Image 1 (cartoon, rainbow, N blue to C red):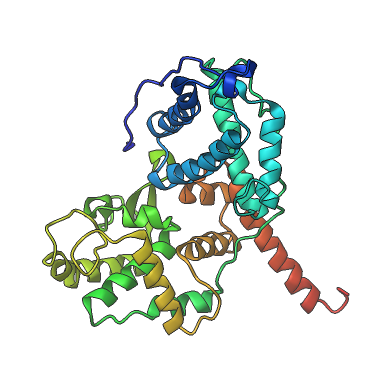
Image 2 (image 1 turned 60 degrees about the horizontal axis):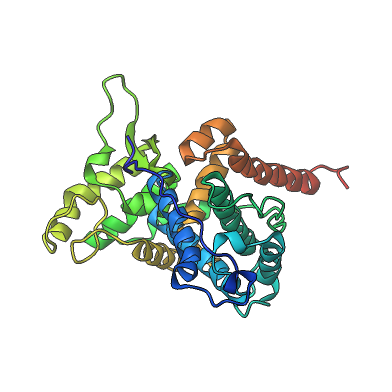
Length: 342
């Protein structure tokens, strides 16, 4: 069951290309608006037909706003006026800031180019443009960035950090246990409602489960371990009621101190505060717990495709990065332990 509604794909009527249409004439208002309408149509397509989350859409909107500014700086006012060299120039400017904006790291620049490629592919498919001029423009190489997992001892210290004698502490411990037990994204965790939890084991003796809604509103069911269940039950019985009494009533699972739904920013703050109390010096975020969840499963012998399903990855290729982490760990142990490894 998804949480996104379907809809009709918007269409556009082709308008002017570059300012003056190459004939020395000033652009009309409709021509000036064509570029913006083309981008808005694509964003609407991502929202309605692909069901992207609000956070992902916001990232696309920021990247495409920079692309729009780049095109207007080159007197391009409509999709039909864009040439391959305009896209190539934009990709280069992302890395060196030649467009007057901040230079981006390779990973951020690659994300921006992906957004632009998707935009041009959409325009070509909708016959807004005659061809996809970005087809041969590729994102810069970002290298292989391995996710950084916490050692198990640090995870245990982090989970034990919140004060279990206060409603906020019980909530914080439940949130931390939940994130490590499920590998959920922070947006999935704070978006949960109480009814998404099933803490009573099914009749067949299986584990408690939670229903998560991931990217594109894709639903998956993830089991919950006993530690997470106990933390969640303690929070629900002893803490959620007092917190909810301060608000106007919400089905949200995790509540803030005013009785409303906990925000992503507040979840970040909770985790960083717990890491500080636990004496963990490296930076810890919700995604650190997600990486730790996956890495520890792989190290424990879990099949990569099972981990893929638990994480909600669309492709197993995304999940396989965790096998590289494990292989790197094995290599380090071998080199330091075997008498004839060096």
